[in-house]
Length: 311
Ligand SMILES: C[S@@+](CC[C@H](N)C(=O)[O-])C[C@H]1O[C@@H](n2cnc3c(N)ncnc32)[C@H](O)[C@@H]1O
Image (cartoon, rainbow, N blue to C red; front, side, top):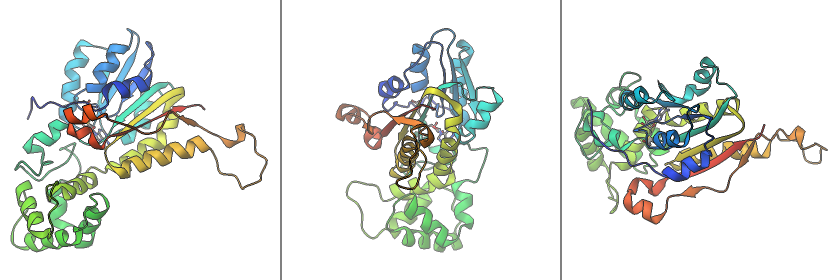
């Protein structure tokens, strides 16, 4: 099913500038989406440059394949960026990559297409998988999950303070009804939430929590970071745009750890080389400007961090 749904790219120039594109370089866009960043990277690459576009979502891949047909510098790869190291190894790119970009979370086409089940505003099948051909849909998970597990997902990933009430309501409802649609879930949440936020739809946090869980978003990020230092060449850039404080915390801690290097007991005479510092951080977190947020409210929660491999 597709789609003329558009995605407005967040921090487009800022992210591509941060990658410092070398004309002959090799870059990976780990979250191709609708190619917003990729297209600008291709514009800045020379004839010998290469770009690998990764996405879990088959619709994102189909979009990229149209461009790939006209531009052989682009290679699309369907899968999770969690496997970025294996993928790089298979292509013999290990240690040769000049820059990796991750623009995390979901794309606007995923949210806007009711059939994907990500949206609490549009009725559709309760799916929420970025790759609808693998893993467990939100409906299948909610049909069997224990109350405590649902509570934990809503609280941890959705920061939903009424997570327990909502989980209880889901368990109760599923005794009498099979939950198959987004609207069914929205109704349950709407009735379970005792105090409504003036500025937020009552299902916002729960949908976010379930989506993050269903797509393993945080563990995929951790896995990608585990391999990133082996992928990049010295001087290679890592640029990550997060939309959730839990994602940003993972990125921030990863960068800090490798900027500081190995931990040695205080007072031990260690040389700079022995510290094994692997990264330098470029600047602090970058956020979208007011103008960008006015034009694209999704940019509101974006936080971009930039690091460079030194070793
Ligand atoms: C915010 S959008 C990227 C938009 C893109 N930068 C653009 O400008 O068109 C995020 C994309 O990353 C994909 N994605 C999220 N997590 C992923 C993962 N672990 N592995 C691969 N793709 C992922 C989603 O399917 C979605 O298409």
